[in-house]
Image 1 (cartoon, rainbow, N blue to C red):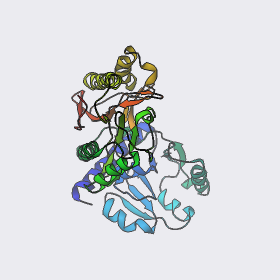
Image 2: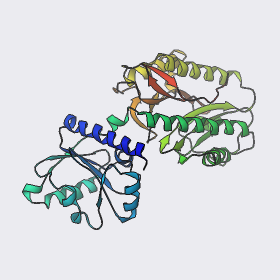
Image 3: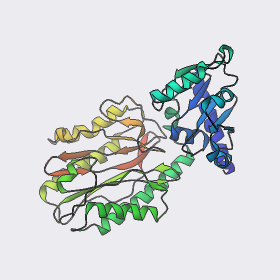
Length: 366
């Protein structure tokens, strides 16, 4: 781990310590993989991070000892080999009578029962209280730091390039699966760690499914094609949707496309810091509703993006999340008509100076 990365982790640990007071706990047990990574820098698939007022510990097994030493130098390694009862007492040492927060969104019932059983095995003076601490780290992660924004921007630009490649090679006779493979191949040979999610390619009427799975079905001339794709760079995700047309767009496609584009770009222009996710969503849905297609736009306008493809804040009809500078969100209205198809247009944007700045550069139909 570089000096800069160690410094970043140390700052995030200190931000997490500030959250302890806000949450009314004395320590936080971090088990969500992306939250573990954000707090400590550790990318392993097994282990926990414990942040107290005076220490930060990564507890993991022997597969990751060397990795922790490289990635999480701001933390202490606890060698967690064997059954939980062999290392939990050391992990929780000094927290007797204290409140230890856990992440309820990640903790399964089985894991919760295992942890409470181990806590119950401790002597009374050594036993902390296990309490739910919802969104403990997610709230912090919603505001991106400079390192995160750099990684996100690089991911967006690579995703844009993959989309332009797919647009260039898409043609009648190519299957949806083949076009999805073109996206993946381009991304992985041009610097992506991985895809953010399985690429969506949906031709013709299949485009009415917002999360369509690519089929071994040939694309046809005279149909629209929804392409939703994302890549990971240094762990951070991109998310982009473009809808193309194979041939010259007909009047119905052009009309629906123009409605979605107007809703999308108007939302990007009018969304501002201090709005709730619901208010942001309403900007786009009002345009689509007034055009007569309100019943065909059923999902939220967008979502935060970072280490996870979907994270805070949410832009949707019931979201009370307040939009703030430093958040990176998608703006992705769509219209989906069964039997006909769909149009979705999506950009990734960052809130700066109270307004959205578009990160996505991939071209749209004019």
